[in-house]
Image (cartoon, rainbow, N blue to C red; front, top):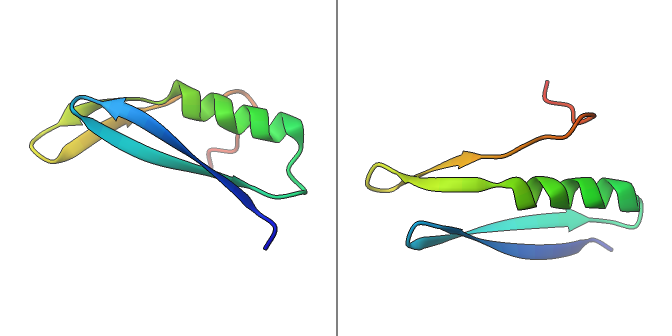
Length: 65
């Protein structure tokens, strides 16, 4: 309990992708801002008949392993 979730609508072609960001009281403002920057960097395009190709940027410091 105690989490907060925000939904973001991302237009992709004639569709809308819904992305959710969830955080809790232990999340620092810097962590939340970094996560929001990633969401705002998302770019997508239709792929095939039913797919979506997604690209996004991870700022320095994100663990991608």
